[in-house]
Structures are given as C-alpha cells and as structure tokens.
Image (cartoon, rainbow, N blue to C red; front, side, top):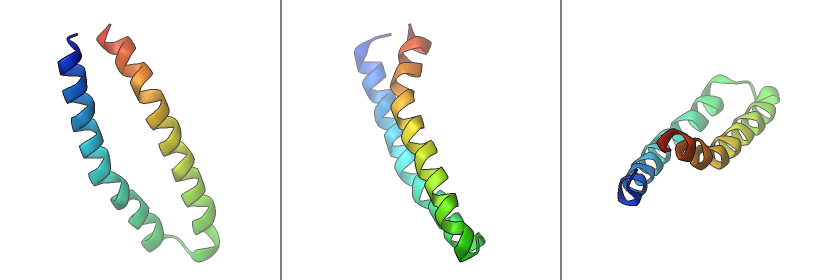
Length: 64
C-alpha cells in the first residue's frame, strides 16, 4: 500500500476516534452509579490505550 494512502487512512481514523471517544465516556457518566464509575472508566481507558497502541501494527499487517 502506498504510504500516502496509509497516512490518509490513519488521519481519518484519528478524526473518527476523536468524535467517538467523548461519547463513550459520557455514557459512563450518565448510566453508571458513582461507586461503579471509577472502575468502568479505568477499564474503558485501558482498552482505549491498548487499541491505540495496537492499531498501527494491525494496519501494517492488514496492508501488507
């Protein structure tokens, strides 16, 4: 895959992530009781960090 396509694809992915992440966090704030909110946000944050770190490797494998 051409480097330009990969850069454009990652830029679009970042834009989408920037639009979706605040929505996911707001659901935690609205739906969960206070005592469970800390744990839920911690799990959500960890999963987001892992996904952000793994995404470039997955894209490299997928794009060959």
